[in-house]
View (cartoon, rainbow, N blue to C red):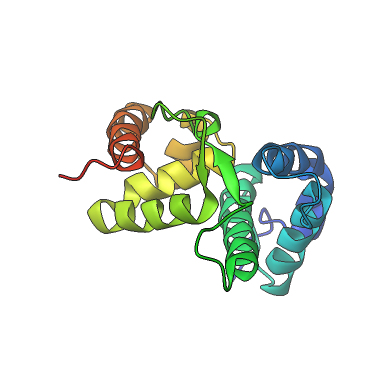
Length: 175
């Protein structure tokens, strides 16, 4: 059952397109020039996936939260397809700084980030979702708090812990 206030991807995409494209551009900025996935294609693929599910969204923030997951999956699927047969996940790096993680390195592999988020989810699913919303969705702490149904201070505290956890893993530290 959907309320009259819920909106479809078709109504939300035109309003959010420029922001989604800017996010996609940041994700792909570190890629090599001949990279086959472009920001516009990433946004369009996310829209296709969101539309295919006939999902309705309570508001713009909910749309961005779901779009964040879709964009993450698309980027990871693309990186996995490209790395088939390779020893290293070359060409698929993302900026650590854009996620706000001070790990003493400028970039790491997209598939590494996905693996780290999966590990973090096993440790604390809410913190992993918060990182995904922040990094892939570009959501603010207030927006993340709304999506997760927690206080803004909880998001801020979770970010401190998640950022430290991710930074330690990027540096190769283990508990």
